Image (tube, rainbow, N blue to C red):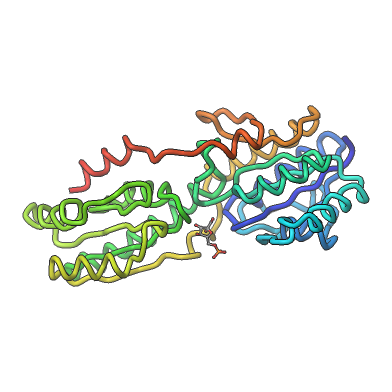
Length: 320
Ligand code: F6P
């Protein structure tokens, strides 16, 4: 192969720049030229494309966001948009495309592969909700950002003897909320994957905490669970404890990537280029027990990821 393209699509995630850098440098090392497709698939449809070389990615490994911009491209879901994207690849002589994002991004890569454009997906989302990969680029940094914020909240909650209800991102999945909840020592974590008994798992746990001398509480609510405000109102009504709500929101998507995200992005970018060089298509690079490998996109999309039950049980035991 002589020329490849790289794009980032869907919600951005810290480490996407490190992935772009890895792709560009891995390709350059093998005399493969790289085109950067801007704004995800819409860059392919609209011809928003830049030439990239080893020096154009200098210094980006430590930067949050994505230098190629990102978008959720509805046009890619239409036959016309898809055909335009495939035609652009053919016109520009793109022999392979690396697409970093979540499941929507992989569906785009799958559709383009069917049109004859070799595509490799790379999991990049703070949600860590890709069933076929035990890790997605951005998850660790997002956890660390949320932890830093919640540690600060704890200071003021402690001083006022309040309860803090914190909403954490994750779309329909609770992986981010569980990891964060464990790391901040939350009294309770509300997750979309499991039914929660409000009285025993929140009110009773808060009551026991009080008896044991805990004067404040952190309750984590995954955005997919429901309204943090409603949880807070319910807590206030049941306990009378002064309660405040914080929605962390998009702050979780920013910031310089952690070591974990920089390293994983470097490994996955390198693996994606290797996969294209080996003539693979319609594959997604995954981490399988921390071994970076690749699997068929369709197979990957069919997999789901269970909540880490052991982590949940450990957290429940040690939090009060
Ligand atoms: O998928 C990443 C994510 O940050 C989710 O956690 C969240 O639900 C969603 O994207 C928010 O999307 P947007 O940036 O389009 O509001």
